[in-house]
Amino acid sequence: MQIIESMISTRPNGLKRDSKRIAECVATCAECELACLACADACLVEHDLGMLRRCMRVTMDCAEVCGITARLLARPFSSDSELEWALLEACARACAVCGAACYHQAEKHEHCKLCGDACRRCEEICRELLREPEGS
Amino acid sequence: MQIIESMISTRPNGLKRDSKRIAECVATCAECELACLACADACLVEHDLGMLRRCMRVTMDCAEVCGITARLLARPFSSDSELEWALLEACARACAVCGAACYHQAEKHEHCKLCGDACRRCEEICRELLREPEGS
Amino acid sequence: MQIIESMISTRPNGLKRDSKRIAECVATCAECELACLACADACLVEHDLGMLRRCMRVTMDCAEVCGITARLLARPFSSDSELEWALLEACARACAVCGAACYHQAEKHEHCKLCGDACRRCEEICRELLREPEGS
Amino acid sequence: MQIIESMISTRPNGLKRDSKRIAECVATCAECELACLACADACLVEHDLGMLRRCMRVTMDCAEVCGITARLLARPFSSDSELEWALLEACARACAVCGAACYHQAEKHEHCKLCGDACRRCEEICRELLREPEGS
Image (cartoon, rainbow over all chains, first blue to last red; front, side, top):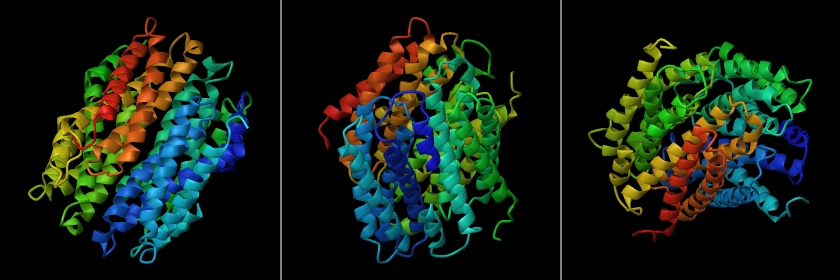
């Protein structure tokens, strides 16, 4: 999302970590939210729905957490870094749990594989931001 | 969002309009949601905040409507086409209103210009989907 | 939600329909959103999950639409009455569809009955607001 | 929200803490989300908008976090207690920050006082759940 990077970098003052990295995290969280919703919806028409109970549950949680993380990080001045930190941690965790559940079904269902891929990318980029010292 | 197109096109059965077009609309709505949130947040640090009251209000509405439109369309089997239709209409309208308000501030604030651009793109793609006969 | 009624009625100026009615609609939409999420989640542990596919899908849509309707109406000055109108219509429709699907399962599952009740109340109050002339 | 308590207590099996307490927390988070949105919107028409920048920012964050906390807790089987824990913590924190900022404006603006009250109640009930041993 080039536009989010531009939005963050046009902020009248201040600097909040690396605009490019934040924008990348926002885009990845937004993509993961939607991939999770799409996966849960696709599960609902599968023949082996009974095997997908856990997968559906965790995708619902993960979609919510990815969505709020994208929205909070997209706001360039949202200033409570402790809150951002807590949500990045929660998002990385939800993605780890969801990614594992989805990969477990990846051989049978392409949508689970794609969702697992989205979760893995999202977990990685959240953890990268968590490692980065603020203000760098 | 290549992944959303792939998710939609891997659905076990059925076909819901053109996957590529839907995925493009999902990505554009998601981007517009986040651009609106970023713009409202950037407004909050401007010196002429008093002039941005309307801009902030409509971006908040627009962010909500773009967000739900992205989420509903991302679910490949979500089957109530009348509901989708109503939300695409509402989204196009919210983007038209927000885009106009943002462009009004575009010369003074780059973030308003960027948000206006996002709204314009989002309105256009929603209207394209509304024109498209379903099942084509 | 007494607090929402108080919030709406303390607005510095203007008047947006009847505060009491709007606050009642906000509370009912919020309750219906959460009832839908709870019902979908409860479906996921039922033995006859295969019979609940449609129920789960429509509760997910309904939860989204009720949520956004509550949030838009809770903002006392949110001024685009055409957008509010569109969302009240969409919410009434989503609740009608979801309520019917849930009542279809009401004999077997208490959570579906409760969710159907919430949808029925929410549909009714949305339709009441739609009938009410604005500014009355 | 009697209905949420009933929904949680009708779950086919298992037990997740005290239904009554969880339902109370869900209702309080949902109320706080909407009070925050109403307060931010009411701020937008105030004469001293320039003094309300921080208030508006933190209400936006708080609304998001309260919303997701309500939605996660409303799902009776949503099973990742570590994720719930993280969000209850984040919610208590966001409410503490937002409540303080709103009370700072409470003498001038009734909506800020009401929002501060909602935040305080929400923080308290989140902290109560955090103290409660799971499974009790």
